[in-house]
Image 1 (spheres, one colour):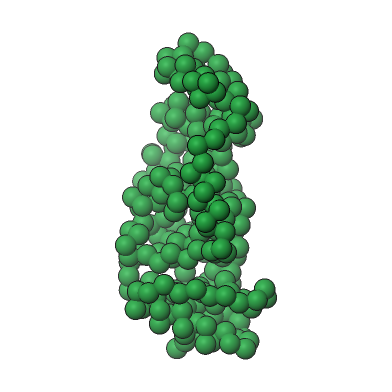
Image 2: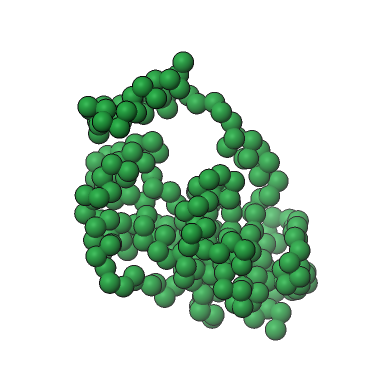
Length: 250
């Protein structure tokens, strides 16, 4: 049935779009969907692709321009889940998913990354997660904030919990960064990309996003923040980071 995963009463041309997208996916060819605002592109694409990945042992990798947009397809997946059991999550970086950083008031990307690298072996949340014999598998799709709150209640690391949940996910919503940069390894060691389907939301933005990501410019503000983090967490510069950071500004 063409609309078995479509959660609404179909409007004009939605059924045709679902069928066309599904046919393209089954043949392994790319498909570009251009439709006006309000057409319902997100549920249409999900309804088309969910039946296809059932037999692929993979996931729908849904890439959006910014992390702030990752929840949208998951909210639609929740509606589908009311009738068909599917799981998915919106994936966010360490800055949004670190309990220890929030406790210490660290908000910058550089600061959270440094904290995670230096404190991972002693972080109580990471240690608690490693001690767990079974990963709690949710029975419904989850936004990043819901995963964060679940981990907070269980006193485990939200960031690494979401990584463990990847292999159970039919849909993974994430930012362009994870398909355009080396950050993708975080996903690829849990999700078989060759058996997955990539959806690029607002694909007209991907060219500029790729150019920005590959820019070699770094602001002085970023350099200052990095030096402050070294002073705070490695005052004796045991890792030898200070000189390397200063060289970036030269």
